[in-house]
Amino acid sequence: MEKKHLDNFFNTTVKMQEYKQFGLTLPITLIYKNLYNETEHYLKETYDLIHSEIDVLAALYFNGKLLSPTDLYAATVFSSGGMTKILKKLEQRGYISRIASKEDKRSMLVKLEIKGEELVTLCLKEMVENRRNIFEVLSKEEIDSLEKILKKLTYTLF
Image (cartoon, rainbow, N blue to C red):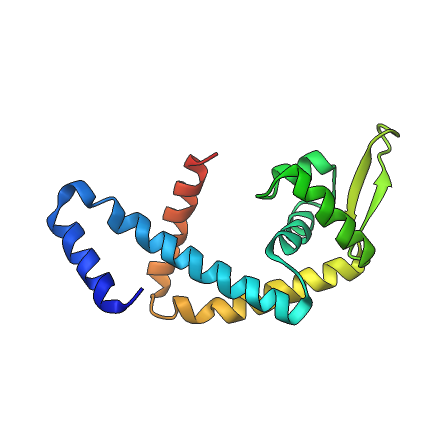
């Protein structure tokens, strides 16, 4: 979106109260789209990964490194059918393994392997560095406020 169109949009939403909500949702959408596309391209070019694969590795990393497929599915944002395909690919690449549950030998758990942990920590570090510039226009107080607001809004979704 060009800046002049963005300016027109914001000027209109300020004048027309019934569209005020779009003044909040469009920026969130544009920021998400930009970050998602940048990250998807970076992960594919650098590590031959797609977003959902790093999502699985990050979910394991931030949730104790061992989850049932059901818990892993609940911690990510894509379909369970897609989960099977992603787990298979990550397992073939040595990033995860599937082990029998101690509680129920019929079920399997997904374990983040050292190779997967090293990859996800490297990716997370690089993504933080790559995204730092977007927040440089904000003061520390603005970043703290934005973090609280976005967290509050996110929890209303679940």
